[in-house]
Image (cartoon, rainbow, N blue to C red):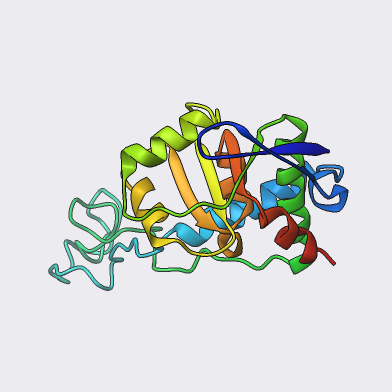
Length: 208
């Protein structure tokens, strides 16, 4: 797949890049995409939810009535979950929601996500550029010029640029990451990808 490289003013630079088929042309595997996204979202969970069981609540341990002959069910303490203020029977406890995925599964998921975007013509290549200072309006103008779309945009840089990152921080539908941070969730969550020229080569070099 061949794409034109755009300048930040929206005009074509005259350079063409060919997207590597082993990165942007694989047969997408929906199941591994699901697994990788699930792992990413699970890792975002704090896992700190906690409730007290009957051994932890502060309540009287006095037996409410005789064991037999009272005409009702037997109860040994107000701490039982059946009573208001009693302990929670099957409440949540702190836990780690993360789980392991093999490297090859995660790689296939990323390649599948990138291939989906390429097949949908949702990838834009832009010339490497720098910003002298964080300017949100300037970054908005660049995205408008290159027709990146007015929906969620993921911009991938070959290396960190603090000014570009700070310029995007107030934009709800724009996310800027480096090629080292690219993941399946970020790709699938974006409507279009803006790759700074050179990112595609780095991604191709990392595929084994």
